[in-house]
Amino acid sequence: MLRRYLSDPSHVLPVESFEVNTDLTYNKEPILLQARQVKQLRNKRNPLVKVLWRNYSGKEDTWEREEDMRTQYLHLFRD
Image 1: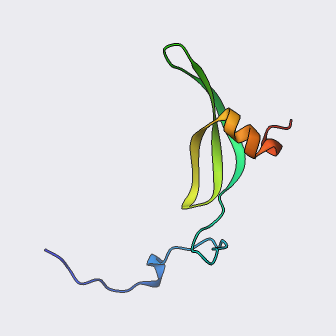
Image 2: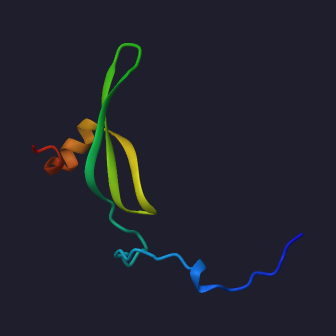
């Protein structure tokens, strides 16, 4: 059985502001590299990095190919 919702200001979640382009897209931006891993396929090795992204819904991390990340975001790999 459904019940009627009673409005409560404490239920409102804070929204982090980020810029939205005129075509309703936004730029994703990596914050840092969290981990490295080599994925072994049958006869191929794929180096991966775990990237923490900004401007996703909350703070989200994904596994990306290291080669692609090096070409696009070289500043993350400088020690």
